[in-house]
Image 1: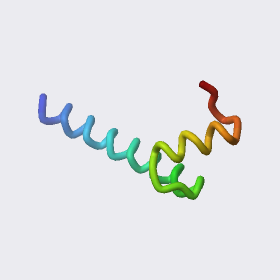
Image 2: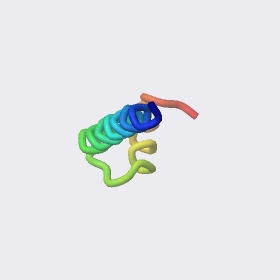
Image 3: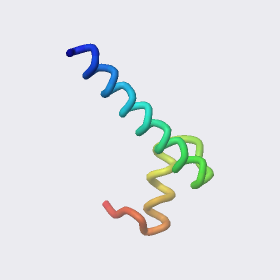
Length: 47
């Protein structure tokens, strides 16, 4: 049971990582910090 749960969690983390990479590529940035700055400039997120 624990093995099945770990496989599920691992696949979910991979999916999230791929999503973040795709967003960074679309924003044309090299890191997560740059992505956050760019999203703030675009008005997509606020602090």
